[in-house]
Length: 156
Image 1 (cartoon, one colour):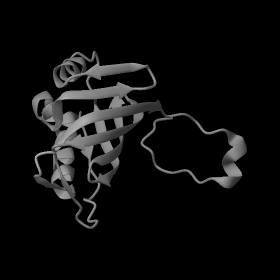
Image 2 (cartoon, one colour):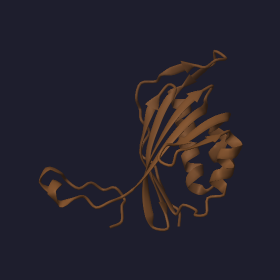
Image 3 (spheres, helix red, strand yellow):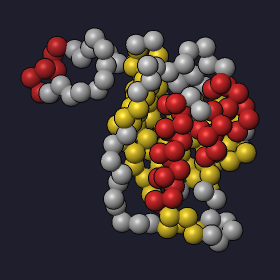
Image 4 (cartoon, rainbow, N blue to C red):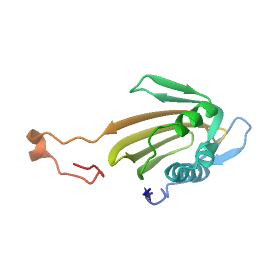
């Protein structure tokens, strides 16, 4: 069963960015495109998920040292992933202008992965994305006196 949880829209002051064609692209337009992108990703709709990317997008996975060149390669890579996500929840969506960051959890076979996506926009399309993935872990006991536990969606 797929789940999608998206927090309320950031109602920050509208920022507009002129793209190279001198068209005005508002932060609200980019945020709406991002929400559509993440909803499509959660639903497994590959075509809509990849509408947000420029044809020449570069996507980096620093943890594995991989770089994907081009929208077609990115979509093919994702569509051939051997596991399909069973859960997807956005924790935060932050940004304005050309730089947007999404913090989310994606679940594969009951294992949540906390993920950060950093997207850079040009002409209302993602030109560069960097993604970081981390598995949940149990905190060490020695820190307990200084911390409180937060809900992260991890399964212990």
